[in-house]
Length: 388
Image 1 (cartoon, rainbow, N blue to C red):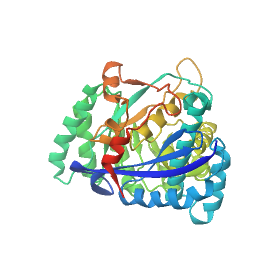
Image 2 (image 1 turned 180 degrees about the vertical axis):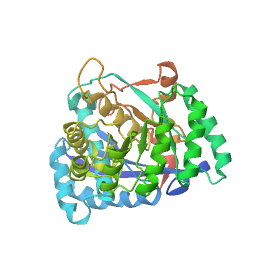
Image 3 (image 1 turned 45 degrees about the vertical axis):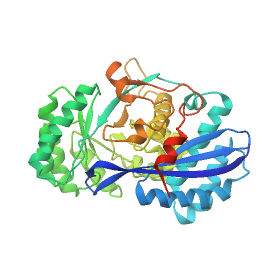
Image 4 (image 1 turned 120 degrees about the vertical axis):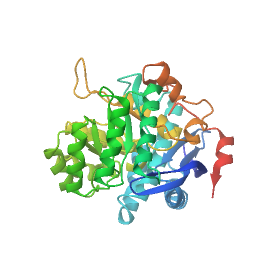
């Protein structure tokens, strides 16, 4: 079954209001889908991490760099294809956009393989350890407004996420240590003492400021402190993990098994957050997952993007072995963006309908059991939102 074409589709629309995290505000929602076609008539879909102009750059890498390397190759030779592309691009990018581009192609190849076998991806990996997964809802994005006003907005959003039925929630910070603590206090106040909440800094602090914020978050009983310092600052992560009681999480900005080996050997994370649409796709994700578990580090996948990314992560969470094994193993969660996202809600011919499932099923969603990723995008939606 030969690869006959690889096409990128970058989708975009204007958000109802600008949203932000610690690094920037943005006013458009983007998604980058990848389609792999074969001479057997089977088509696979994947997704590349990265918004806006990053997605457009990745589109060029997918179509003009990776596609010529793999045309005519057997679509089922995923590992052969992965290593060919990685080895030929090694001199030009062992991390970053080349890996994001490869990720989308690789995920699409797994979708093709599942459709060829008539099996969901989790069966190709080795089976489902669970048929449904708990979901946490993240929201509480930054806005360019006074912190006191934003705190009230965060209170309302956090309560809404809890009432939607999610098992936990996550907020953004990024105004500085003292205002960020005030925002976290507002969220804890609004959801009560018994509801887990997490804090995502998107690597905005120095180590000393991260200690200051982390100690306050311990008092609030936050579950984890995500990307407190720059991803390159391995020593900072190790110091924070050793000096704070709160769980330190991160890893979404790391690529491939070699970078992940350094993170894990450094012992700087309590919870690993690999991003399958960035680190090299499902093929490389499985290697990273094995490394995490070999270091006894639990995994909660980072999830950002469209319903294709959500479906891919549901397949991976189903196939993730329990760690540790036993009657009551540690359980991974699906990350779910509760902010405005048409590419999550409207993209598929048969929507995943995560919010309804969460409300109906006690905060859990079922894993798709159809062939491949178990979902199909609507070509009319792609045509409507595609940019060039």
